Image (cartoon, rainbow, N blue to C red):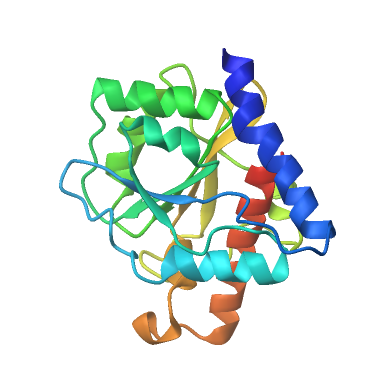
Length: 225
């Protein structure tokens, strides 16, 4: 069953990605990506209006992907999560996964799904124990700069620094299950804020472009790994 799920979420998505990129024909949307809705009181909706939609638009234009421009919103405990090859999670505060939700996310990731977490400042101390609940046997490890996620269409030596908070460097962490990066966590970076409309945070166009390019790398890596 594990390999069947992995085929349905991952291999088929790769086929759609390649076909839509090189066929030159207009196809129905190959897939949709989702924003995670969670419990605990944190603001899962922090960047709801423009962040992920802007990244989707950027990917469709620059990677020639065929992603539905409308983001989905999916509850982490819902079986609907298996409809989305890529799920984005963000927020500033508390987050709690029930045992059933943690198991659902685990099944999703083992089955070929990908979770991107963007710390919107304040999420770190809450998300780490929840990730341990999902994969108690795994450690959240820093992803080295030579990892393919930093070298897809765009080349980066680690994460770009979008917002400054505590004079700490931007870091990319991940959960690696049986050799596959299933979850990527950007910390002290605010990548999701960088995808939002410029007027929201007054980010420079240079920072917004770097954020969108790194986000495109994450999506490209997640869909064709």
